[in-house]
Length: 115
Image: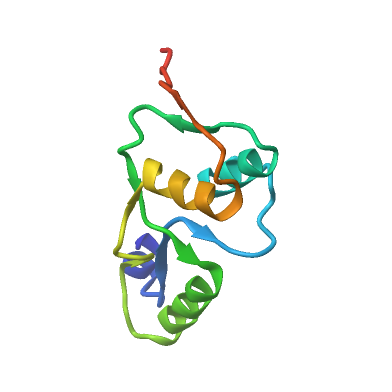
């Protein structure tokens, strides 16, 4: 926005939410790939905390389309690119479990922050 205000340049600002799709790295550390990797290895799915924290997910092709539309628009300022629907981490774990390994379990881990 500083470039827009200070130099009067046309800008587009995309706020990209959780994106998934083909060619995700199995060890990229994101929740979808973590759950899939654990299910494929027949390990318990690690759900941090109570599992009620939420995320919205979008497929990568929808993100690309959204970015293209944003770039072609006249919109100035931040624009959210994501899905309005949210899933809890327990709901996501259940989807992965049902899709890959019905017999896998959840491993609830409370993640503590150390200052």
